[in-house]
Length: 589
Image 1 (cartoon, rainbow, N blue to C red):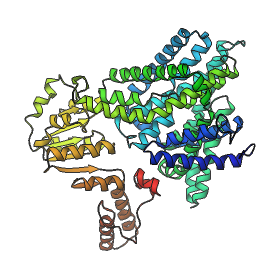
Image 2 (image 1 turned 180 degrees about the horizontal axis):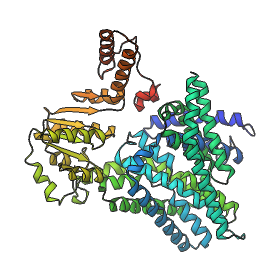
Image 3 (image 1 turned 90 degrees about the horizontal axis):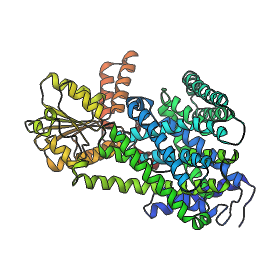
Image 4 (image 1 turned 60 degrees about the horizontal axis):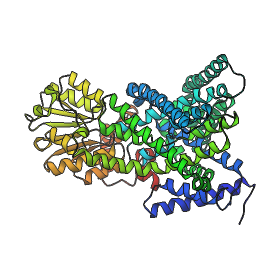
């Protein structure tokens, strides 16, 4: 059967094969990304040619990228990135610059022209925001320290795309001046500032009024209109349409409607994630891989080795643990989606040939496909090596005042894992009441601030046995678990209870699913802040309308018992909407 020229048929076909690819990947216990890329290569112009229009493929891919990056932008928190601005901004810029220079030198060593070598350096300097964040999301590590640092690196790289695309005309054979480059950069800056400033004012205003209409369909259509409007604006000034959608998502993430926007856009994001990756697989030519396997392997090897070593070294240079540094580096080991745009623009400017674009696409597909298994395997390997190599020790030794030996005097104390707002509040209260405690955090700046307050703090991951031993978990009475990383929380509880079965554990959770699992693992008290906030708001609202205080207290008590982790749901009051559930429950719904 042969389909041509029918966009609707192409979309239906892609969705059908995406389902088959995801199902096959699931049965093989592989990431869905593998299935999407594989079926894309099979049905595409270089496979059985069920779809043979490259224009259709490019349109579908760009359409998917726009919606995907809007969803990614909504999910990213600028507040978290600002807290890590030193390593994110300075480290990200160093990584981009040095990677670009290495790429230029490697290209020159392969005999390429200077212009082609420079484009190659820019191409490999950018990683895939979508692949990296999808891996973190699937593993439940978006809120972890390495997840937040990696997200910040991705944002800096995406923004670095602007000067890269602006400088390409200067590298072509056409006449070009530095003033033209300056005008291009200024235009890009004005557009992004305009999106940021006006978006922060206009988007919440518009969404507030749309939400007041009570129509979910209108709210969703408004989100789509905002997404493609921002994409069109950036495209009209010569920038990437996906960049505009990403910036719109970032702006919206800081508004009161970020959570609802994310919950509404999730089905679209997941759908077009499949659409994008299948379309990406369709652009890869297996024959090119077979005929130029050595060159593709050299590019893939260069990208993965250079980014791993360089990024790990940079993050480590900002005093983060080797464990954190390596996990951040593992997430950057691919060529990004913006690299396609750069390579395509370079072809249009006649800086490189069509073969170079094909090389970039094939190499990018390979690196993207390798990212999930390499990240999972690398993470497990780092954990195993940490037990044997002192260099990977999960906390920083050598500070006599805050060394492990000081912890030996602690008994019947509290171990606080996570020094965010809640952990800091608990630590200050314990300090005032002279209750002994020790803090554990992976963020060196958080540990430094705790020590400046005269608190005993360990720099490391609570998921590591050595850190728990240093915190004297066997002699502790209580464990306060307020880390933002569910995966770390699960491992910490499991190992802490193995070392101290009588340990009293209290944990903060973000989703009901997370709390139910921790309860099953033996956590005595699970606090779900969103549920508690909802009940107190309900209490205030009903009291403000002169309801009987006894009835209000009874209702709140009944709801608390119904919604509590491990409680029996009250059929009269259903569970909260999807944004209050965990990732697995969202997928089931």
